[in-house]
Image (cartoon, rainbow over all chains, first blue to last red; front, side, top):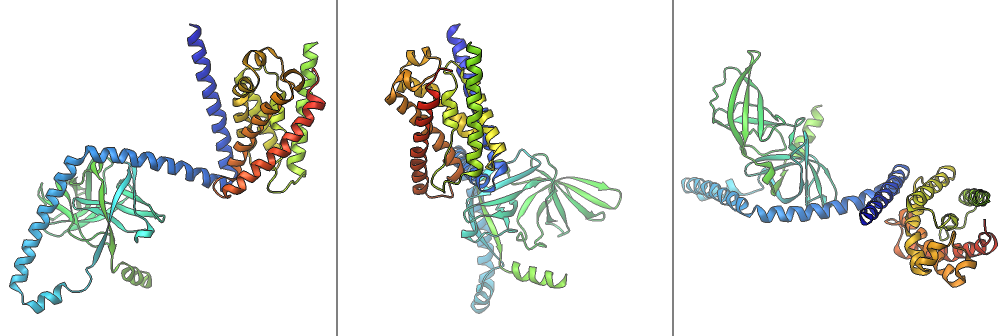
Length: 274
Length: 172
């Protein structure tokens, strides 16, 4: 009994100490900008240490899924190579060289996710690459299974990505079978999204594939995003397609940051026109 | 009688707080020396005071000094609470558990000069390290911080010993 009351006293003393020190630190951070940034910096570095450890454990536990994804991606690439090989057989050497020389429209920066939130209405992702690696604000982030988000802020070594699991974010998506496109937004629940503003006369079937349209400078075209799971008429003027996304955001680890090689030119022209 | 003694002790603490506010606002000792009477204020609080009470008093005194003086709010209170937390452990290691529990207040006469010197030195160092780390860590070099702690310690321990001999050595 006496021992218990002593333990309670110790516990209350520790709690009081933490409370008073906590109040003091809050006061310091609110009253001095230098201290604020320093303390935030220390807090973030401690947080990122735990994030990295947690991520390593998650990565280890996800080896099986990761391998399955890589195998599937490999199979897709092999199929694409065989299509390209067939194309190369059909054209002359000069045409082939002319067709493959020069820079493509997009290049990619491989990145690993350090922190990934999926339970909020405005989710975010932190990547282990930053401006030192060529990442800039406004770049898209993708995997072979869909879009992941858009880079919102960049420091030399890390990037803050506004996840697609964000009710205020939309991307341009199209129906693969007929190329009709519309804005796609996350519904706020699980892996479900909706494609809006599809003309009412469009022929859409359940199971149709939805991919990126390429009508924005952020994401390359034809990245598969998901399949149509429902078709609803809205006010008799447009269709709204329910989409089950391929990308499992909970199992995300390796992603690619997209650099649009003509992005700056597109932006320049857009700015001039405005 | 003891009530009167306590009143004069709290009066002395109030005077030390006013001197501390004057030091903070009007006495500039350069970037390397931080003068403070807060460890002395904590030292002069009766040793029978329980930790929660001592921590709350230290926090309140630190906060009042922060509020009234022209400094960063929370800096003195953070260092004072940290110092208050170490009062008992340091008194047990430097003096003696039984003796420090029996004494109403640890004075230089009661525990002897060297013990009192070690006791007040450790507490002053706890205060200064906490204060200077919150004040400078991250944007001042380690060498600056170490020199500041060392010089501030020398300056403060002289003041603490002087006040302890002249004012705190009496029975209040």
